Image 1 (cartoon, rainbow over the protein chains, first blue to last red):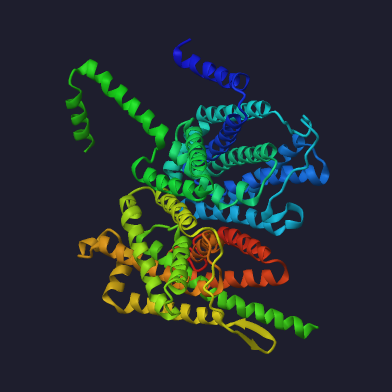
Image 2: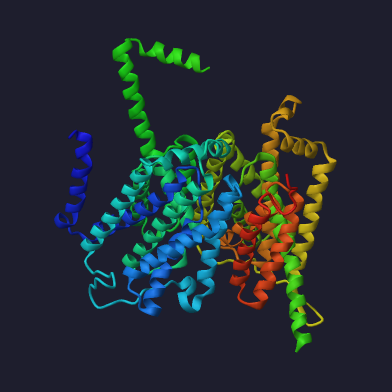
Length: 343
Length: 290
């Protein structure tokens, strides 16, 4: 085994060991939040990386959280059954909106705005049905006494850490699975040129629908997980346009096209919010978003591939320029010639 | 009983029309930017919010009368629009459309949190109470009528500017063909800047009218921003007449939906209508089938 193959196993073992070594509740809480949001951001980039920019993921997350909590409170359905049902509901919603979109070739700006309407609808429905969902005041799943496996409620943060870690790792595995499948090539072709891809025999509608449903299922799971961990949800924290934009923002900062990019985005954004919150106290209200916004604009203008993406790119080009340097001896001339040919 | 009900219905219809005028004004500015520069300002409603704060401070703190404060507020937002173009859009003119969209999303965060930091999260209002018009058992607020009238006049002025002046003709020409017009001696960068300022001025005008009816707070943009985009898309991005028709249609759905149930259901209905319409007429209400 090479170092490249061993590294993920060592990193995984180290991550699993964290709660047994370091039991500080606050640090674990931050880590859990990072893992849950990293999973949500990874879910968004499943389709975002293929040019399918959705602002409807706030809606999927809201459905995941609220369906789970409502089933538990009103019908006493255990989250073990409630979460799959919530994911199913999000998937159905995704198909209802996305199928006609893809069938009628609604792309680019128009796709963004249709999905924006979707998160608007979910937010308004949650607010309008305030007799059941508590409206904008938020909603709390009924607590059991102590930790209960069937209610998916645990007092111990270490348990939550391990659950979040497992789900996050599963999200990365799904990414890898898509990355290595034929669908990836089909979707990349679609994002370059839909008509050309269709002419080459790619079933455009079906491929896009598949990745959208996978992404919606994962996002709903992230919402349900957030709900079970925080035990409090409100339309503003799990649904709506603000959450959708937050997902896009974190992914852009971290790096959209690389597997760990969304995770890096989650680490940066959550750490930034926490540092500002501790540094400024209650005066920090608004400051974190101000810094976010400026960073987002700066990143899109100067580093569209995100932090991790740009670092990996730089490493790659350095490796590539070093290799011909050994072979040809004159790297500068060869790149100049290449540029000339390209021109 | 039936007569009574009809009065409510009529009132809702009229209020819908009045709301429609305001929404049409909002949509016009956004449509202008999209039609000419081919960029969607996600932060458009936040520019309106800043304009509303401008009005609030000019009137409440500096004691200016409403009619003196309004041109100043419009000017402030117009400058903001031009700055937005220079600082954010101009470097991204050749980037992917999605990147432009997301960059203005970042500006949305900046403006919203700037307002939170600078002005706090309190709801503020102008303190001007305009009378309510009573007409045959219907209550129509004077401020809505005023907003409707000014919005219509504003739209008419923009129409005349676009069709009757040299600059307006140049703007329309750039919108039609981005490659050829620079060869004809039109400075595209300057036209984009003027258009951005004009779009900002329209946002400022909308702010002056909205501040009469609604309280200002940093998140006020979120309550009508999404509706504005949806109206523009419904009418066809860049299609002025389509946006105008869509605004009135949308306002009627919200107003009538709100009559039969909660206001939120009016919005849900309107959003759902939008999604259905996207599948029937993806290129906008008035688009010709190709």
